[in-house]
Length: 142
Image (cartoon, rainbow, N blue to C red):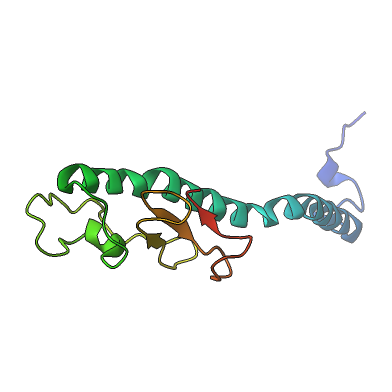
């Protein structure tokens, strides 16, 4: 009795059938349909988290260093650019306090106001994804 290999069996081919390929495509489509809705909102959520980190920790650290060296926070007119270049006659300025100009995750400038309306020292915020101040998507240090 001779044992035959799969290759020797009549009609056997080393290829996928159309049905097998369709099954694989359908399975991949179902998996993508289940995973994609979970990932879609994550990028916006990550941007909001990055903006919160900037206005609550990263930029305030530079502002605190500026205040320690100069005895005051930058004025609204000086803005956050005072953290990168000496705004004028500050003899104790030891910056730059930030390596690059701070921009929010949407590529826009952060808003800075000193003294603040929400905080006594300063207000620092991003206008959010739509770029409009004063609406619900703003991310601030208050």
